[in-house]
Amino acid sequence: MIKKQVGIVGCGAISGIYLKNLTYMFKNTYIKAVCDLDKKKAEKAAAEYGIEEVYTLEEMLADDDVAIIVNLTTPKAHYSICKKALEAGKHVYVEKPMCVEFEEGRELVNLAVEKGLMIGAAPDTFLGAGIQTCINMINSGKIGQPASVMAFMMCPGHESWHPDPEFYYEKGGGPMFDMGPYYLTALVNMLGPVESVAGMTGMAFAERTITSKKKFGKKVEVEVPTHINGILKFKNGVIGNIVTSFDVLGHHMPRIEVHGTEGSLSVPDPNAFGGPVLIKTRYINDWEEIPITIPYEENSRGLGISDMAEAISEGRINKANGKIALHVLELMHGFHWAADTGRNYNLTTTF
Image 1 (cartoon, rainbow, N blue to C red):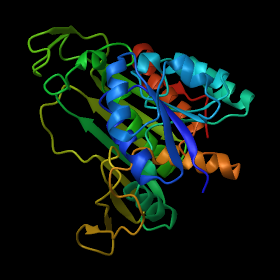
Image 2: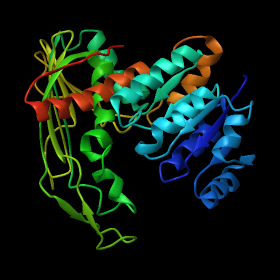
Image 3: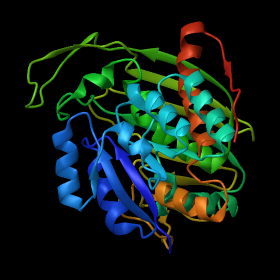
Image 4: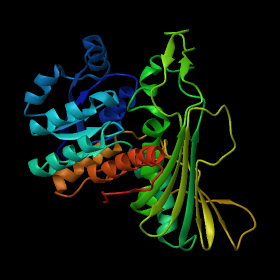
């Protein structure tokens, strides 16, 4: 097996699981280099995982051996770094969301096509055992014809635990752009592309107080809506609801449920790779758990990168690809646009 050499940009909190899995779990990737604005973070990662090079971004892009750039920076830097990588002839995989602005995302997808390169984006959790089991249940007709879907991601916000939570309340943040990619990516992979959306947004607090240890007591001005209620009309006729919120202290709502003409499916956390998957049909009195036989139940972040490495070798499209990520990015903007204008937003992308 020929391993594809990877360069990781950004050695913050999320990088740990990528470094671990791309080193030990997946056999077709090899981390050649890391870089970070804080060189000490990059040096620490290199020492811990036996990585050859600690580069600047320019040095990484100039290394002909590096085939895939993994962009783990904050959302505001996604576009500029992805564009530089594509222009340097590198395949790119970026953390969610693909970028902050929809038109910038469209530019990146078009640039990748123009250059004959692949672009992919997190989340890759939909490739895991839980969501793939749900896809199989839907495609095999276990719940009949899907008719509706509901999704809820609600919490009090991240300032109580995250060491640097400010960006969650800046442009490009908020609950939809933070967690929406997990839920929306799962929804569109289960049910197909979306035709149009409606939305309403709110903000319970104009200012937040950080209570995590590092910046305890610091005040954060909230720039984005922190409660988003969206309605989706899928191209196949399914009607969906999604709520993402940083304004909810606790709730009993499901993460995702898909309802069909013959039954209902309880979908596991789309921010994870495993189960449980539950089904209720007209022929059984209560919910039953579906045995999971598909691989990748554990935290397998980086699976989308491993698939990209395989896709490069096989000459096919990668599964966590740019068209899906762009569709999800447009959906998130669509909810906000619909809320601001009081009109439905019609999607211009598909996959």
